[in-house]
Amino acid sequence: MASPSPTVLRRCRVAAVSLVTALALAGTLTDATGAAGLTRTVAAPAVALADSPVRVNQVGYLPDGPKRATVVSSSAQPLAWQLVDASGRTVASGATAPRGTDAASGDSTHLADFTSYKGVGKGFRLVVDGQSSPAFDIRAGLYSPLFSDSMSFFYQQRSGTPIEASLAGAAYARPAGHLGVAPNMGDTQVPCQAGVCDYSLDVRGGWYDAGDQGKYVVNGGISTWLLVNSYDRAARAGTAKALGDSTLRVPERGNRVPDVLDEARWELEFLLRMQVPGGRPYAGMAFHKIHDANWTGLPTRPELDAQPRELHRPSTAATLNLAATAAQCARVYAPFDRAFAARCLSAARRAWAAAKANPGVIAPDSDSTGGGAYGDGQLSDEFYWAAAELYATTGERTYRDAVTSSPWHTSPDAFTSFGFGWAETAALGRLTLATVPNRLPAPDVARLRASVVSAADGYLTTLSSQGYPATIPASAYVWGSNSQVANNALVMGVAHDLTRQRRYRDGAVEAMDYLLGRNALGTSYVTGYGTRYSHNQHHRFWAHQYDASLPNPPAGSLAGGPNSALQDPVAEERLPGCSPAACYVDDIGSYSTNEVAINWNAPLAWLAAFAAEHRHNS
Figure (cartoon, rainbow, N blue to C red):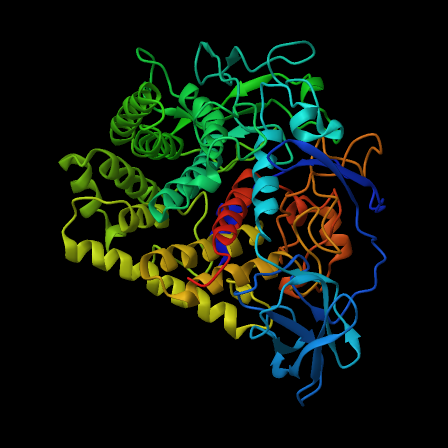
């Protein structure tokens, strides 16, 4: 693998934000849950809770899934373990396997494997050498609430619509943001930055990207693709009913359209609005982003943001994201709304033609005032992704030729150890061509599918060879590392779909262990899930640590995770000398380790849906 530095630089969102107090405040988290829209209150975890050397998935395990724990111990000899139920009765026992020093965390670890236990219940604990783990469940249906909550994140990130208490809970209800209602100055008629264009566009809607209130086409693209893909793969697997109408807390419930597609459409409509109109310079391309002229401080409620909003110059990367996601839209939405699907396909064709006519319009890394730059100077992967989606949807020779002539079509580097991301999208094209029926020659399709399985084998080896079940190597703890763990786990999920081999399903599910507490910090990175969980993520409205009248992030919000580069002042102050997998702090000021983002929650939702459908042996 090449040096991670260029990849790290491309992925990092440049952020200049106000510093905040490092005081950790415990709070109360209120969130809606369940398809009926009932509310529940989740108490914030006790920050002072004693850490346990017995690291488990703090939510639990599937009855027929892998059940493993990591034990931090310098002992060179196996240690006895006992699995005890809620009454304290030992229901299984065994001995750990010493694993030595874990490179990513620096911990000396053992592995405790209790997969053979098939009982179910709540309140289990694993006791190793007299030390007890946090409590966890073993039951089917474990991941259904997480899927619902991780999808509610997107509803609550919606711009241009009120967030309703009946759907999100009273603490999260708020007026619509950025509709041109004072003090907002957008997004119904947004002008360009000086020198970019001489007109304004209605670019309302979409999702706020992360902890800020900008909206970025390239990050919206991959996030939308992942949500739509989660439904598309479930439809092929025969499990789409669980993702159907009236399964999520969205306003569109009851419209005979799968709720996950309703949520993705909120962003798709915004992406379509970002296309440069006909008759204008760069017609058919997409504006790269829209956000405030200057950074807002923390906290800033969306409806109280008084900053001017600006459209930033079109880019080829944004245009290809639009082409790819709109082509996917045309294919997947056709059974539910043919008119919308046709509108998507028309936009995709125009975007592709505009990108071909303007192949090198690069968003500059210097454009980072008021919002992230999202610069990307390598666009051959975006061309491949867009061509793959257009070919899968239309079967037309023009797009097939663009696919087969791309170096990414045969490159062994489409899947990397770091994982795909908003700036590395060749894997998305590869996944589409390997799974969506198309007219490529059978040997070509077989090769593509084999490359997915080979990548999954690599991620499975990485996961199983480390002290903690991360799908990334020690060198890959970069900004948003948790999303890279999830993205690589997703590839294992696809490999399971292609082969029906259980080891890939188990690998994808075991990667969830890492996100939910079986990690170097013994902390679940998903708010509301586990005994100790992140609850001070960087966000301008979910900012309880900064303003006690505001909520913590809602249940189902994924923190960015360890980032060894320490790219914010809080991390620099509190994490010097940290091991890569421990470079994380649950503080609202640590935006480089503890922000939320749509492209991080999207693979979490994909994985939760995948895990929720695998309740029994495959």
